[in-house]
Structures are given as C-alpha cells and as structure tokens.
Amino acid sequence: MPSNDARSLLQTAVPTAVAGAVAAAISGGVAGGKGALGAVVATIVVILFMGIGLLVLQRTAKSFPQLFQAMGLMLYTAQLLLLFIFVAAFKNTTVFNPKAFAITLVATTLVWIAAQTRAHMKAKILYVEPEADKGEKPKNTGSKS
Image (cartoon, rainbow, N blue to C red; front, side, top):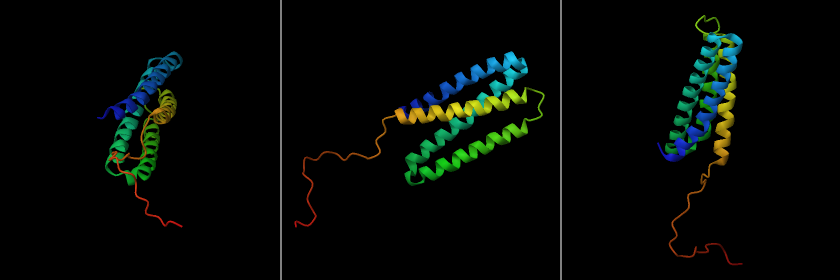
C-alpha cells in the first residue's frame, strides 16, 4: 500500500475508532455491558466496511481513473445500504443492545465521512501530471495574426 493510501486510511480510521470508544463508554454507562458490546460491534463494522471501500476506491482511481466518480457514488450507496441492512438484521438481537448498535453505527459512519473529507482536503494530490522538463520551449502552433 503506498504511503498516501496508508496515511489516508489512518487519518480516517483513527478518529472513527476514537468515536467508537467514546460511544462504547457512553453506551456502557447507559445500557450496561450489552450497550458497550453493541457500540464496539458497530464500530468494527463501520471501520471494516468503510476501510475496504476506501481501498477499493483507491485501487479503482489508479487503474481506471475515468470510472472514479461513478465508482465512488456506487460504492458509498452500497455501503450505506449494507449498513441499513445490518441495522435491520440486528434489530431484535439479544446479544447486544440494538439501539446502541444503531446509534453508534450512524455516528461512526458520519465521523468516518467527515474524517475522510478532511484527509482528502489536507492531502496534497496533484491533479495534473507534470511533464519532465526537457529544456525546450513549447512551439507556438497557433496563427500569428
């Protein structure tokens, strides 16, 4: 993984993990051990889903730059749908508190998106590939009127 990709992943995963830890502490205080477990599971789900999505999107950007925007929109839509499916699937679970799970899932997803936006805005990514300097002046091919 190139250092830019690893840095971007780190700058998004760490704030999400911190938000998940805070959510686990709050859920543990409000709903007990099952609440804390629900918050931890939700944080892990968000970091895995969004992390895999970020890696897929970065690979797509390098391999097929013309598909980057469409792939990004499709990927985020699919991720949000999968997260809604997780909330619906664990709505009636007794293993952990489903409310703590759902609230943490939404909160950590929002933290991930905000951190990813911040990391992208702070990254110094060239959007034009500079050509090698050959010492030649560009030729004027336009008309001289």
